[in-house]
Length: 502
Image (cartoon, rainbow, N blue to C red):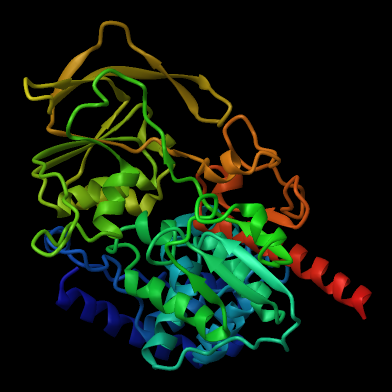
């Protein structure tokens, strides 16, 4: 979107705000549903493929208030029921409509200290927004109230004011909580336990906090500066961060309780073990897991070729295997790193793709080519052991499988060659095995996921777990939901123990 277009959108929003604001107290639900949905201003595709700046530019104040006026303030609040962390959505949106942005921010922080993150990367369209009455009323769920964009607006507005409110922390309890991993689940546990007055220490294996938020999501979707600011709030609350600390190597998990005196431990080490297809040629030079590719680019800044200590593979023609958000991130990053052609190869159709619609649309705008009902059979190399092509098979859809999606069925003798010099495998991740390997009493599934009860407690007393290490590779908001449940259980356990000690 060019500058003129952004200005046109902004002027239109100002006109709509004047038109509807005076009527707001008397607007009927049918009239609110007829207020036009506000588009999200974005960088033009031909500009953004040459930079790592954020694609979506965010609402203006007028756009946010007009969008908020569309909310019907439903009595049943189904949007809240479908939010994994139960943000009071109608209440914070109502405050945006009234221009009370700080109050809106404070309402969100009752449930989440990561609003700028969630507003950018959570799949609201299949969660809170999927139950929006406005979308149902106009029979177009793509035009449901833009809950995520409004959450982002509030968080960005507060940050731009230069004064981000810090949640209240209760008096010190003398209890200690260890959080292993600083991804979304761990950050939520740290926040909720610290609010109750417990001393909280986050142990992070990498040199910067954020987990998958930082190494897995490109800056053009989630700037690292945003992660830094969200983490800063926790630090100001008194949460201690210990970086470059690998629990399971630097220290055994059980030692945190038995030797270091922690009263509870939360394990949120994520699903960082990349999965491969097990096909011929995956050991060739030029084949990467999406994890490695994105970590080099995001966390290690390999795109800054003249400054970075880690290299990034030079590519002209890239095939990304997979159809999820990680595949979209990898393909779009490859484009920004100079690839002339980028192909997403997916064995089902676009309808079955798990990636967010918005990310798929942005990828198409940026020139990413989609090859549906195809998949790699083997990867071919040249005389130097480098990727030169992939041999693909064509597919057709059969009956639905356990996921509810139609199962891809190979078409015999449909092989063909696709010339590429780089292959990025983005078919998912397995759970980080380090904790289970070094904690033999920990009960895990066959896939290595930690087994927990309804309170997120593991098979070991005082040790809780949540996020991708339990769910497998899932979404940021689902991981945060597990973190909230675990924190509630930890806080309850420690409170009961404090009463007994009195």
